[in-house]
Image 1 (cartoon, rainbow, N blue to C red):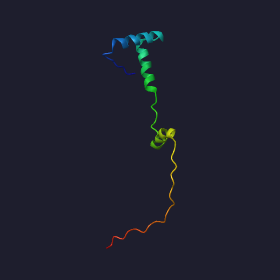
Image 2 (spheres, rainbow, N blue to C red; image 1 turned 120 degrees about the vertical axis):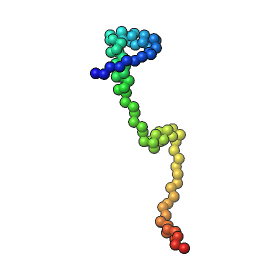
Image 3 (cartoon, helix red, strand yellow; image 1 turned 180 degrees about the horizontal axis):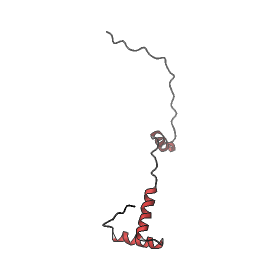
Image 4 (cartoon, rainbow, N blue to C red; image 1 turned 135 degrees about the vertical axis):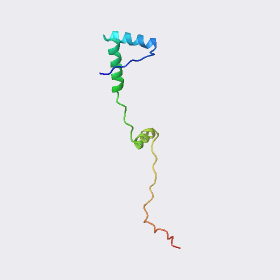
Length: 82
């Protein structure tokens, strides 16, 4: 197992850690390990698909019905030979 030293901790933070450790029946070191383990176990949510995120954001405002124009035949390509 690795070890580490944390310096320059505010006295207030150290006191809170000591009180919390005592309340949980643990040493300060064990309490700090548990806090770190819990904080790092939180899984960041995966970013959504951009289209889904925009839809969720705009859904409360309602939708807009657009007329879709009928499809036309493909045009002839332009002639650049001259």
